[in-house]
Image (cartoon, rainbow, N blue to C red):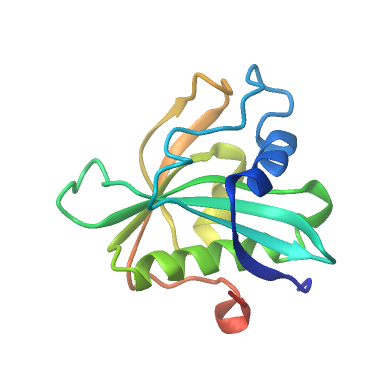
Amino acid sequence: MAEATIEQVGIEAVLPVRMRVLRDGTPSDDPRFDGDDDPTTVHLAAVADGQVVAVSTWLERPWRLEPRRRAAQLRGMATLASSQGTGIGALLLDAGVRRAFDAGAEIVWANARDSALGFYLRHGFEIEGEGFRTLDTDLPHHRIIRRAGAASAGPGPAARL
């Protein structure tokens, strides 16, 4: 696994990675998401060799099927191509999930690109419902969910936050 630290960062550190990874080849050239500037939103970055190589954003948002339970939505998870397959994305995801559950969330959910479903399934998420295409990317997605206490094949305590 590659060496990286996980840091809480501002939105400006997140946008360049989102643009390169999540907007490349899509109809959208806007890497900003609704909720990016909410006071409770947390942006995390994996930093390796002084460079931001992966990012994720965490929002307090209810899960549509269980709106009374505390939930966190993962948005904008992106890892630069040069760092994919190194374990850095798993490190970042694990740190964010743990942070959400430690803050009292019972559920973590996301709208995941179908191309990334295998990654999320390996880290304790389950697919929920039918697939769909998003307007901004026109790419196939599925909603994924992970409940507090679900096992993960993630990197465990190695994440440094």
